Length: 61
Image 1: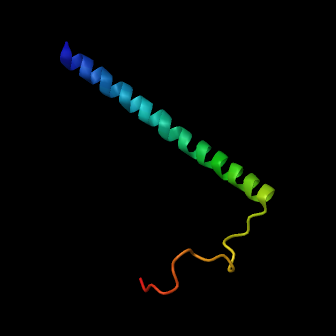
Image 2 (image 1 turned 135 degrees about the vertical axis):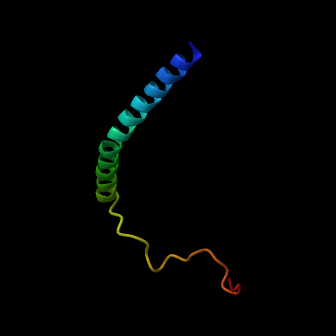
Image 3 (image 1 turned 90 degrees about the horizontal axis):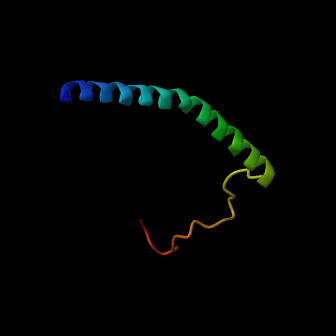
């Protein structure tokens, strides 16, 4: 009985993993679209050269 339950549980986990992997591409696509919309709204063009990094000038890393 325990072996049958374990086998059924393994099958359920396998199916859940397949469904989750199937949705990954859709979610990545939606994330990309959301990012594009936010970039357009904010007008972000990348890091600006005039913004300091925050590291002290006299310390050598």
